[in-house]
Picture 1: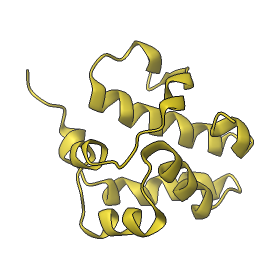
Picture 2: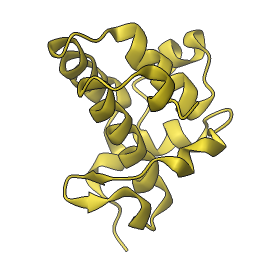
Picture 3: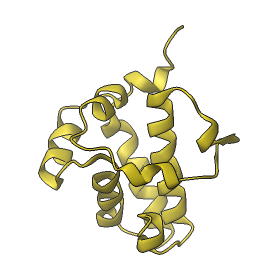
Picture 4: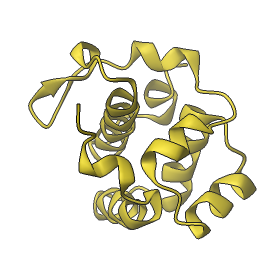
Amino acid sequence: MTKHNIYKMSVASVYPLYVNKSERKGRTKTEVDEILRWLTGYSQEELEIELEKQTDFETFFANAPQMNPLRSLIKGVVCGVRVEDIEEPTMKEIRYLDKLIDELAKGKAMDKILRK
């Protein structure tokens, strides 16, 4: 099976889009970073290093220090696909991130986004 093109895209190339989407809706880069740290277990410094290194999505998620076990509580539709129905692990992680950024941009409280 061929891998999806997004797997080889750098997280850094999409990161500004996440930030812009959030800022257009009155949210902050700090909140985007908090979501990324919550999901992956990277520290802020480690996250910045991965962005600087232009790490691709596949490697970013594969090398994440501690994927948050609460991410399985993320439900809903992203790009017309139910997140909970995605079987391919890397694509599921990417869509979890997309869903969290969507929730941020829609004004959801951080406690709810981070499943507290």
